[in-house]
Length: 382
Image (tube, rainbow, N blue to C red; front, side, top):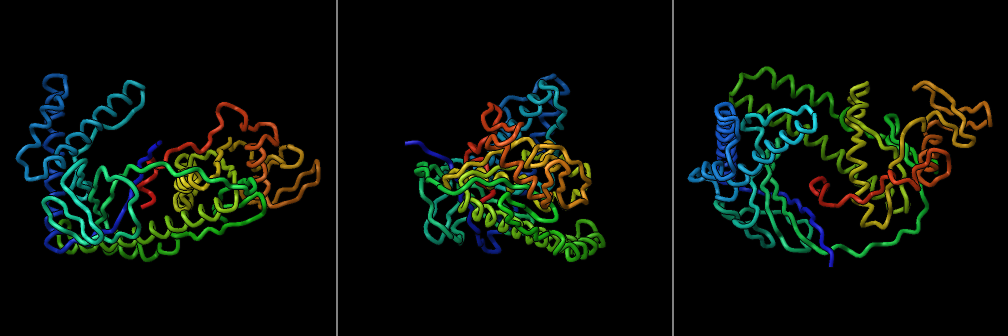
C-alpha cells in the first residue's frame, strides 16, 4: 500500500512557566546556531575547508537542549551550507547562512523521540505535559514533532505523520478556466466572479498605527517587546483571514469542477514591476499550491498554461486585440465578440489547457499537471 506524509498542526497552551522554559530553549538554540556558524566561517578562513558533521555534533553536547533537538540545529546549518555550495556551483548567487537573533529562531524539533500524545495533553521532554487542542484525529503513525512559536506568541505542535494514501475520488464536474486578478480575486470561464476581500487593506490602518507605536519604543526595552507583539498579532490576523479565504475558495472550486486551468504566473517578478501590495495580498502562489494539493484528494486536476497573451487574444477567433490595463472589456474588431476582458482571458486559459486553441500545451510534455505531493504544502494547511 502506498503511503504519504501529512502534517497536522494543533494549537498548544503551555503554562507561563513552560513558556518561559520554551523561550529559554529557543535562546539556547540561537546561541548554538551562532556559535557553530562562527566555527564554520573560522574553519573555512583558516583551512579552506568546512568542519565535518562529527565536529559540529560534538559542539551540540552538554548545552541543556534535548539531544536530538540540538542535533537538528547542527543538521539545519549543514544543509544551509551545502545548499549554498550547490547553488554556487550552478552559478546562482545565494547568500551564506547568517547569524540569527532570538526572533529568527522559532522552532524546536524532535525527529524521533522525546514526546508522547494523548487526547488532551502533549508530553514533551523536558517541559512536561502541555494542553493541546486536537481539532481532528490523526490517522497514521507519528514520526516527528516540531514545537513552533509564532511571532504573535502562540505556540503550535506540528506532527509529521505517515498514513496510507486515500483512494482516489472521481469528479464528474465540468472543466473551468481561472483568470486571477486584483479587482476581482478570480474570474471563471463560466462567468462566475470571486470577489477580492483585500485582507491587508482592511487592517492596513490598524497595522500602521501599531507599527508607528513600535517605532517610538526604546530599543531592547520591555515596552518594545510588548509593541512588537501587538504588531505581530495584526499580521497574524491578516494571514489567518487570507489563508481561511484561500482554503474555502479552493474547496468551492474543486467541489464543482473536475479540471481547473490556471496561468503559470510568477507573482514575485510581477510584484517587482508594480502593484506589489495588491499582488502579495492576493497570494496567487499560495492559492495555486493549495488548489494543487487539494485536487489530488478531490478527484480533480489542475493544469497550468503559458500566460502569454491570454488577455489580448480573442477567445472566439484567436486574433490579437491589444488593450491597456484599465480597459475592462474585450471588443474584437474581427469577429465582433464583446465580453468582459477577464472572462475572455479565462476562456483562453481553459482552451489552452484542453487543446481548444493554438498554443495549447494540453498534449505537450511540458504540461504542468497537479502531481505535487501533499507533504510539500502540508504546513500551509495547519
